[in-house]
Amino acid sequence: MKLEGLRVIDLSLFLPGPQASLMMADHGASVIKVEPPGEGEPNRHIGAAIGGHTVFFRNTHRGKQSLCLNLKQAEAREALLRLAETADVFIEAFRPGVVDRLGVGYAAVSARNPRIVYCSISAFGQDGPYRDIPAHDLATEAYAGLVSLNLGNDGEPTMPHVPVADMAASLLAFGGIMMALLRREQTGRGDFIDISMHDCALSWTPNITGQVFAHDRAPVPKHERSLGGGAFYNIYRTRDGRHIVLGAQELKFVRTLLGEFGRPDLVALAERGPGPHQQPLIDFLRERFATRSRDEWVEWFAGRDIGFAPVKDLREAFDDPQAEARGMRLRDADGLEHIGLPVKFRDEPGQPRFTLPAIGEHNRLILRTLGYDDAAIDAMDKAR
Image (cartoon, rainbow, N blue to C red; front, side):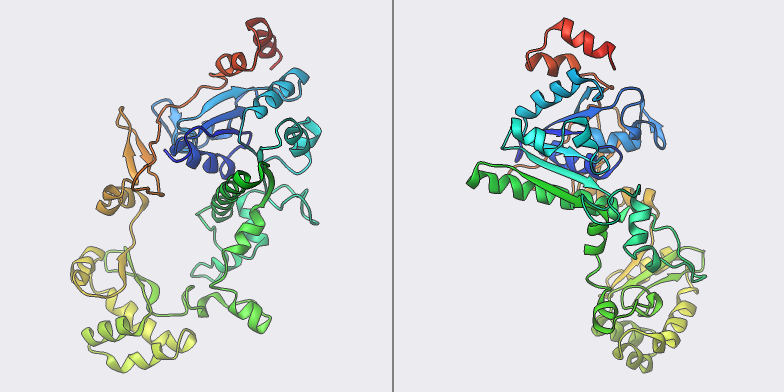
C-alpha cells in the first residue's frame, strides 16, 4: 500500500486529526493514537454504539494502535519524544501553546527528529486575534460566514449538519502532510504545518464569494446560483412528503425539462441567470413536482438526460447500489458496517483494518521498542 512503512503519531481528538490519520492508516501507515488517561478519545463515548464500540470511534480509529500517556508526567513526555524519533508524522490538535507547555511542541520534537512532519490543527491557527478562542466546527463555520448561508424556509440560519470545517481541515491537513513528506525527499527535513479550521472553511467558498469580492457585500443566499436562486438547482417537495432535486442549470437541461412539461415559455427566465425573477419558474416546478411521489419521479426521470436526483436519507444513501459498487459501505467479519475509502488506487488500493484498540492496549508493545523495561512501563502506567 502507498503509505506502508510510514509511522504516524496522533495526539488529536474528535474529528479533524483522527480523520486525517485514518486516511493514512487505511492506506498502510502505522498510526499510533496517543490517548489521555481516563476515558481516552471522546469518540469512544459519542453517539450510537454496536459491537462494543461507538460507530463514531469505529469510523475514525480502525486499524490504529493506542498508547495511553499522562503527558503531565515527565517520564511520559520523554517516552513520547523517544517515539517521535522513530516517526514520520506528528499530529496534534490542542489549543495553540498547549503542546509547547507540555514539552512536545514542534521545537522539542524536531530537535529530536529534524525529519518529522508536524501538523497542528486548531480552530483559528497558531496566530491572529482569535487563536485562543475555544471553538469546534459550528463556531468556526459561524465566524467564516458559512452558517449565514444555511437558511431554513423561515429565513433563519439553521444547523449546517455536515461538519464542513472539521472535514475541510482534515482533508487539507492530509494534503499538507503529503506535500511535506514529498518535499522531505529532496531536502531531508520535515516541516511544521499550521492548519486553521476557520481558514479551511473560508477556502471552501470560491463559488459564493462573487458578491463579496466584486461588489463588497454579503450574498443574499436565496438569490445565489447554488443556494436557491436558480430553479434548476433547487429542492422540491413531492406528493408523499419526500423531496427531489434539480441539480444542473445548464440551459440544455432547462429546455429539455420545460419542453417535456409543455412550458418552453419559461426558459427565458432561466436564461437570465439566478435571482428573484426566477420565482415564477420555481413556483411552477413546485406545483408540478407535488403531483407525484418521489419514487414516481425517479421512474419518470429514468433515461432522461436531466440533472435530477431523489433526496435520500442517510440509511438509503449507504444502501444505494452506487455506494455498494464503489465500496463506500463496507462490512467487517462480524457484519458491522463501516464507511469505505473514498480514494481509489488501481495498483495499490487501500486496505482498511477493522481492529479497534482498547485504551492503552499497545503501551507495553510500543514502549518496549523504545527501550523501556517492564518495571519502567508499570511505573508509567501507575502514574496515569
